[in-house]
Image (cartoon, rainbow, N blue to C red):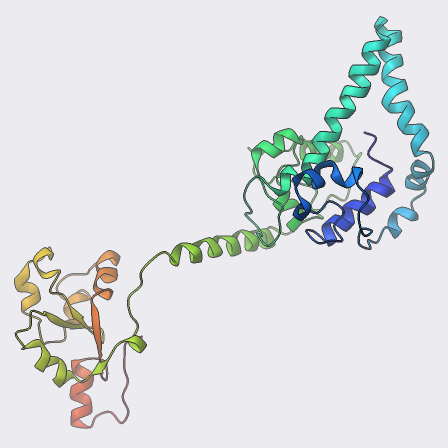
Length: 326
C-alpha cells in the first residue's frame, strides 16, 4: 500500500490515538480537513508527533526486517509485481503498471486518508463526543469498513470497527475468518458492559440536552409556603382562582377546570380541601400526562404537606414538621 513501514505507520497511528485533536496529533482534525487528509504529508509540521511506545515493534524481527527493506519491497510489490503479472499473463504491461499499480495506489491512499479526515467530520458520536472521531456508513464504504471511527477511538484495542451485523466492516469479517483457519489469534474485544456504558452516557447526554428545551414546573424552593388555613381562606376568595391541594402543592386549576375530562363538579368538590387521595387513585388513577400538567399549575406549597399533617400538628401528634413535597 506504500504507506510507510509497519513500524513507521504504527508509530504515527499510536500517537494519533494518544494525542487525538491536539498539536501532538500528526493528523489533527482541528487543523482542517485538507491537513488531516493529506496536508500532514505535504507540509512539515511545526512540531514532531507526540511520544508513542513502539518497543514491541522494535523487538519484533519480522517488523524490523520489513522496516529495513521497506523501499525495495514497496517498489517491487506495488509496481514491478503487478506489471509483471499483467504483462506476462496477458501481455498488458502498461495496464498492469497504470491500473494495478499507480491507480490502485491512488485509490488505496485516499481511502486510507479518509480515515484521518472524513471519519473525523462526518457522522455521529454514539460513544463519546469529546473528540472528533465519528461513525458513518458513507465513510465505511469509502474506507472499506473503517467508518465506525468513534467506536475505534473509544475502544482502540478491539479488532472490530462495527458492532452490528448490518454495519459494513469487511476487515472484521476477514480477521474473523483468519482466526477460523488459524492464521490469526488472540483477537481482542472490549467487554460488552463497557461498550454499553459508552452508549448510555451519550444517550443521557442527549436526553439532558432535550430536557433543557422543556419548561419544568416550579419546585418547593421556588414557591411560597403557606399554611393549610391560609390555603382554605384563599380558596374561598372570589378572585377567579380555583385552588386545589394535591401532594403538598397548591394548584390553580382555573384555566383547566372547563377542560377536565371528569367535569367541573369533580374539581369543585375538592376546592379548599386536600385532594391527594382522590387524584392518586381514590377517584381516578391519573396517567403521567395528567401528573405533568398538574405540576405546571403549582402556585404554592402547603406547610407540613397536607390536611392530615396539618391536623396532626394542631393536635400535637407530631413534634416536627414533615413536609411531603419535593
